[in-house]
Length: 251
Image (cartoon, rainbow, N blue to C red; front, side, top):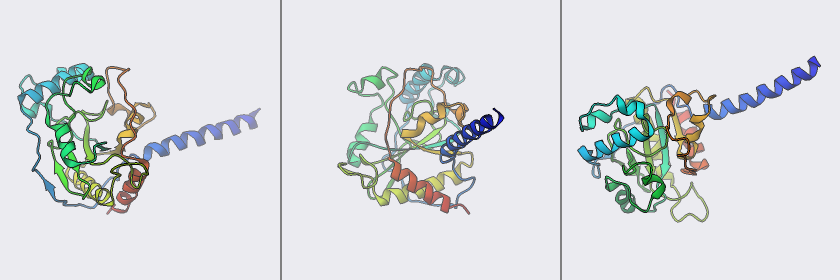
């Protein structure tokens, strides 16, 4: 019996180790070589009073305890946060013009019913990377934007213009090598600017933070248990290669 128990225990330990290693992949290195990518402010989002109020309204639905602690002033400073996570996306829109148009409005379009039912605030993003690798800052790094369920209050978002993984067959605009390199440089820049950043995940991986065993589980909060969406962006190959490059960038 003791031998069977020992075998069982080794199996459990192996499975647990496998789970932990998948979580470990999401961790950023403690430090990265600095980078100074060219970042354009050309398409910066104006975070005016209405957008701030809608952000507070959104938080009142999805993170009410946080919302209660915010100042009543409709100033951008009231929705500042301490960045702990970087979430990488692709837009599912093949052009920069279309992407910027999707983010321009303060309120979400009526055609996006699931999202609209969970708050009128439009989706927003901190950075957009075009297919040629050009980087545009839309939101200030440390202001809450709506781009990922459960992590908006701790996450900087990077959107990549495209609708598929690197070299993905059938995609109209798969992600490019130029975007991969731009993301690498941007993550290094952000990690240097915000040493408290701990994790880098794809949008497809955000629900890992719901698992109690995840070391970043305490960062995830979503008041509505039914409010979840399944995501595939930015793709496994893109993430795998980005993480490999970042491991090489440790000083």
